[in-house]
Amino acid sequence: MITLVLVRHAKSDWNAVREDGEPVLDDHDRPLNDRGRRDAPRMARRLAETGFRPDALLSSTAVRARTTAEAFASELGVRVSTDPGLYGAPARALLAAAAATRRPSVLVVAHDPGMSVLAAHLSDDGIGHMPTCAVARFTWEVDDWDVATVLDPDDWTLDTPR
Image (cartoon, rainbow, N blue to C red; front, top):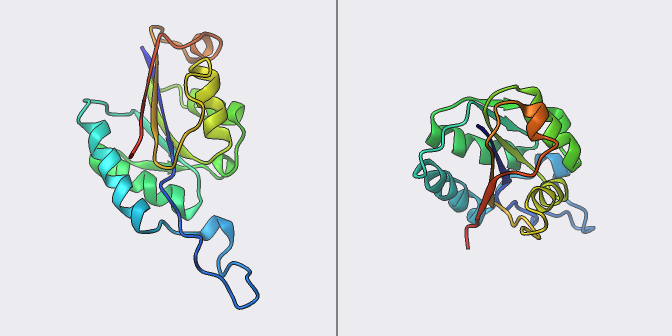
């Protein structure tokens, strides 16, 4: 069985701006805000309670994604592998990165719009949008990523912090 879990990074901080209104931090360096720091461990715990343990956990290199991924890694007892190609990646690149691991269960932490586009595609538009820290889980009753990536999943779920 192939399992793909998509986690959109938790809510990030947009508040730090200079006097001219420009952000203090580059987009890549934005941290989680209070809600994001609260939601990431809570959603990780909820996923862990389902018994899911990924064979691979991939994360964008952006601070907000890495911090979210670290909360999931801590709760799930796995290591985070960062991939700069996941920062701003389109849906097909997110799916390709998961498939390239060749591991039966993969968790990917990344960004919109790629996450929402991929979740919508895999759920036949059942998931219209991935809110921050949403967890979408897709399963295929096959053991080969090459097959899974061309078939609709056999099942999917969505869990959101709200």
